[in-house]
Amino acid sequence: MNNIFDANCMLGRRSIHTPLGTPITAPQLVAEMDRLGIGEALVYHGMALDGHPAEGNARLMREIDGHSRLHPCWVLLPNIGEMPAPAELIAQMKAQNVRAARLCPVRHRYLLTQANVGDLLAVLEAARIPLFVDFDMVRWSEEKTDWRGLDDLCARYPQLPFIVVGEGMGAPRRVFPLWQRHHNLYLETSYYQVHQGLSDVAQRFGAGRLLFGSGLPERAPGPPLTLLRHDFLDDAESTAISGSTLRHLLAQAHGEIAIPHPAPRIPHSARSVTDLPAHPILDVHAHLGPWFSTYIHAGEADGLIRSMDRLGIQATALIAFDSIGPDMRGGNDRVAAAMRQYPDRFLGYATVDPNEPQAMAGELERCFGQLGFHAIKFHCDTHGYPADGDHYRPALEYADAHGLAVLIHGTITALMLESYPRAQFLSAHVGGWDGRFPHYAVELAKKYPNIHMDLAASTVFNGALEKLVEEVGADRVVHGSDVPLMDPGYQLGRVLAASLTAADKEKILYRNAARLFGLSNA
Image 1: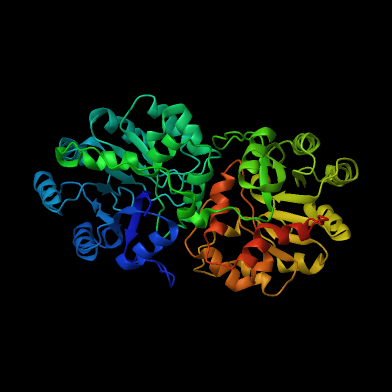
Image 2: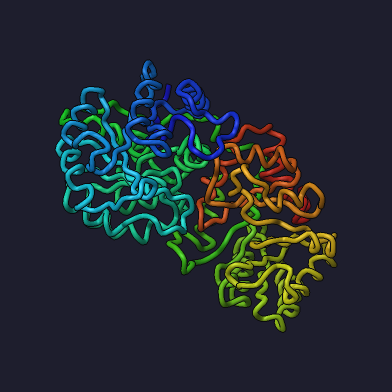
């Protein structure tokens, strides 16, 4: 048994639909931990989120009884009479060996302020009980986390560990300045997928700032596990993130200063779900350069190549951030320069801007006739124009005439698929589908052979890829990472750890993309 200690697991159901096969009971969770190579887990109960914390905590204790690898984390509320007073609550936690607490201010609709939770935080600090703070983040671009409140409370309670869960690529511009002031602030990693992000934090602030979490059973565990294994971490850094920091925090709970059990780096054989395949990998969705919207680390060509080499990625298809913004031509030139610098490692998307319709035809001829590009990119969100609008017609006609792939961040319509049957459409970010409701692109794929699903998406829901393959078939799904917005190792983990055949995984990771891009080794 290895020594990964998962800081973020849930038992039970949520109010939303829970897919069949999701590990929601203690025996199911332990079995999934065995498959993934996770030794222990800190768990809370879904009833404590969507029912009531008191009932959820009681259920948690009943359901984990006899499961020594599962450790309880209680969900708490402000001291307004719904739960025992803070001192009594801590006494109950100590009596039942509960060494961690969780607050959900967004889900449970209260303010994370001194006036609201100060008395509770004071007793948690005195008992040295680490506090997980969950702002109900679903997507990285949401503005839910109260960083100002955390800044204030970390200063007021310097001996209380605050662990923020569920934060993604939007965190660095908020949390990096706070880490310069507060030693008691941590991030859990289930959704943290900054490019080379674990090693970046380890080098700048120390690996002890990060606690591995899977987000089970709602989030797919393969992505954070793959990033933990394949980021540029040394043994000491990997050990800290995978469990030793959490063990140290839990060992101090209730004032019991203890030496935590050592957590050596997990043997390779114990983490087979994150093994890289023998066949090549192609990434159909990547970016180049910095971006206004969030912190981008190692986003130029050299940084991307370093990640590709560590993960066995043969080639990556690039879109410059400049070109999905205000500089179509300059961004395409940036991609062309990367292609010249690293021949055969980068493929080029010619990004077209519908706000410059008079320049589109000439830019396409330049990109394909002179610069050797491979496919076309529409970004309907940043350019503020629908994919089926007239301004995009020259690009669609060009793609149809030349049988090119067109990656579209926007809505593809049936009329487009019918009007341009030789163009191969890639619907961007379908990997973020949770599998619960019909997805327009999935429904179109059942009728039209020239639409394909791009997996690049920050949210990776447990079982969603398996559901996607069930709906459209593995031949219609291609791997994309959105690097450097997201780490390619994290994104690769969604496929590596999925319950799919090796043949289907090879189609998704390599063969489908090689065919769509017309590569000679397809």
